[in-house]
Picture 1 (tube, rainbow, N blue to C red):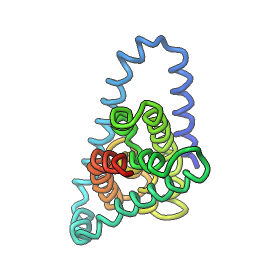
Picture 2: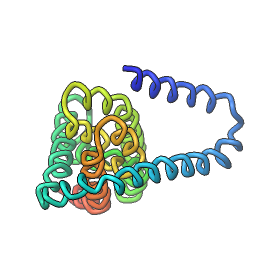
Picture 3: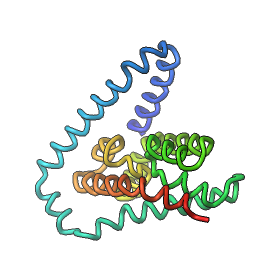
Picture 4: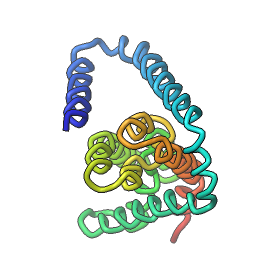
Length: 201
């Protein structure tokens, strides 16, 4: 609960600061700050993974079964998105395309805007941003109360970068490695899956 509280407080503090700062400061400074901080966190996670050789051997023993994690996350994301079509005035194709971003809001929104329309691109951006924000809150809860592997799911494609540090902190080295592989695979799938779904009749 302490970790969840810190995450929520950090997000709220960021929103408040972003509201107060001039727009030129945000555009010039924020991207660099976020990139450097994320790089430092990922560097720390990398050291932790590389130091635990036993855990790396466990991952090697899992073999191709590790693919079940990203496949299950992708399937669950698309299934959840398809259920959303029952509650919103959107076609099945549209909700599946939004869900196929797997949390990668920057690329998915651009792809959908270019290949379909700007309105759905904006929806994809917001939906996948909210997914990433929710992942930061859900990962600690799931890791403690449900299971370490389950905690990988909310992050989707972001488990190879932005949500990897919190997964590493709340679980263990082997789970962090599985999360990285899962995020890498989902990230690779997104640029192919979105155009494929948009090509549906």
